[in-house]
Image 1: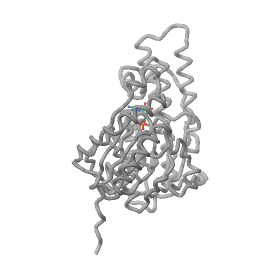
Image 2 (image 1 turned 180 degrees about the vertical axis):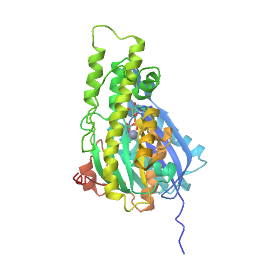
Image 3 (image 1 turned 120 degrees about the vertical axis):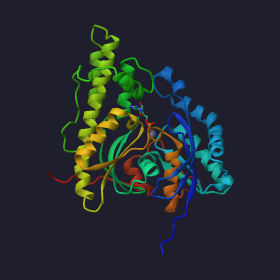
Image 4 (image 1 turned 45 degrees about the vertical axis):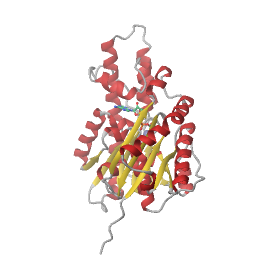
Amino acid sequence: MRVKAKTLTVLGLETSCDETAASVVRGTPPGPGEILSNVVLGQAEQHRPFGGVVPEIAARAHAELLDGVIARALDEARTTLDDLDAIAATAGPGLIGGVMVGLVSAKALALAAGKPLIAVNHLEAHALSARLSAGTAFPFLLLLISGGHCQLMAAEAVGRYRLYGATIDDAVGEAFDKTAKLIGLSYPGGPEIEKLAKEGNPRRYLLPRPMLGRAEADFSFSGLKTAVRQIVKRPTALQPPDLADLAASFQSAVVDVLTDRVSVAMQQFRTQFGKESDSLNLVAAGGVAANSSIRTALMELCGKEGYRLAMPPQPLCTDNGAMVAWAGLERLAIGATSALNSAPRARWPLEDLADSGEMLFSRPKVPAG
Ligand code: KG4
Ligand code: ZN
């Protein structure tokens, strides 16, 4: 007789960038899970005058807001600390001041309530968000596109990821944000560019498509941003219709680069896992996966390549506590709890993850041909 896995309830805290977030999630791996509450307080207003996130302001805001956000998340979920099976928090990578606020709060709650602590890697939280929303089975190909990260990897199990490619310079969200600043849009730039691009002609400006056609699945975006800067710096000032055309041309270049890089990783994933999986799955996660042009292009690519696309709904793509709670829940289910002295990490690079024993990342050899 198959024993039914226990349903777990976990509180997750997210404070690694400029969203103060807490959520209660209930479920059993592989998902989907039930989101009982998902409270996200953005700080974009406070950072907007500076054109980007100011770490000191972010850390202070998290310290002021987090208590209230946690209380609301528990309240909306009609849950008390006693009802929880564990308390999870992002322990990195991210802005260290904010990460410390979230992790230390989770430690205090865990200690006070006598519940296990789970120190979650923010990238793993994004990676597993499609299991929370759709119960996607391992292995899957993961495109992680956010403000700080741009990676293609195979997710084989909780804690086991193989890197196919990553950006060699800017993350794609960073390219959106910097380009937005260049053309006079406010922070965060991704949604602003998407809005403006709807009014523009994507073929007006011929922008570079860095890395297109390369055999490895790496990315580069700094050349694209430089090309936009050169256009903006021309002696005749750009008028609003020109800016819309530039936004549309930039977004279309990003779409071309992403789909080309993903198609390379799809071949590698098919070679590695095609025989052992019933279906080939692509998961797109991270803030930039909220972009509808990118979503549409990935859908078309998956149709062509015989992949099934799983994309968490837009509120689960940008930073949130539910994905952290779910990653904590998946770790709890395999007994991977954390010590109360777990350290916050500004960087949690792939090499260190493999060494730490908490996450296993490795880069496979690209098959020849
Ligand atoms: O995952 P996320 O919320 O935070 C990080 O972990 O980085 O991603 C934030 C990034 C920002 O760069 C933001 O401009 C971008 O995601 N973003 C978008 C869109 N919504 C958010 N980029 C393009 N189109 C969007 N609709
Ligand atoms: Zn993120």
